[in-house]
Length: 89
Image (cartoon, rainbow, N blue to C red; front, side):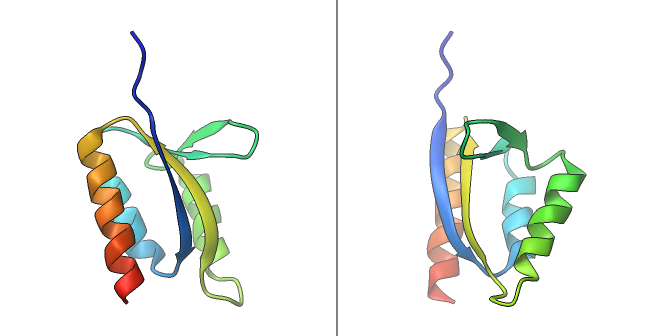
């Protein structure tokens, strides 16, 4: 059975706490996809979450880019809604 993976790129994430809240409320795992194609579970990898938090502490105060993959359409819709609302802030 082939999985339907939905890939998204988040740019200029300023509010990491809100980003993690959306990720934590997803029904299925959400993955960070590295440039080499490796996927890391954002919900369950505490070290990865700490690293993402540190990136947000950089002088710009934003995470410039994260490639995210999920398998659930509803999760993808919630992530897209977050992206659109974050752009308005």
